[in-house]
Image (cartoon, rainbow, N blue to C red):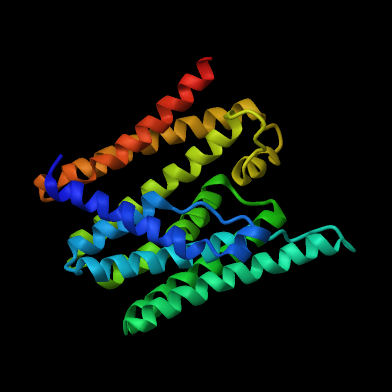
Length: 277
């Protein structure tokens, strides 16, 4: 492992710890569940910014700010569209969850404004807008129950990557680098989304994820068929990510991102071992 790669991974670990501390407001922790950080996505973002001439401190600030916006999005996504009427506790928690998401959004703005990062504020705002517009499209399509799987996955991909794609489009120094990083964010996010659905199905006492619920609404679809579909797509995406990294230029930089497919492979192997038990 190169010294540069080791340093970047350590810096990423430290900034993620800083982000967790910023997100861990005692009031929010008491009344709502803080979503898990998108650690792999944020690590990739930090690598991208370093590759494109950002100072380490500026890359750190923008990565943390993006993590805060992502937390706001993920927190709002946990808000239920329907809840038990006349249940004051449920209504209070729902309102507090909405406010928690707003709090994270305010934190990102404050952090970047303090650094004079007007362009970054605008870029993340555009990405955030794209996320919410796409979430509305997905909600309407799910409600009508007429959406093919490929459309679902395409909309989900935009929701999961719009923040990062916005940053890549704004700050990539050349077109080849822009295309590589957008593809990497899209493919790795698709893998993580499907892998999460697979894990949620396989681990005991876990309810089906959103995509599984969507698929099971289709006529003639069984849980076994859904599992096979997800597993096959996960394995395909693992190969796509591996090949994408092997094609990255310059070749001497390829080892800097080996941890991506290594982590993904470990998750798949761990799940397959659990299935065999």
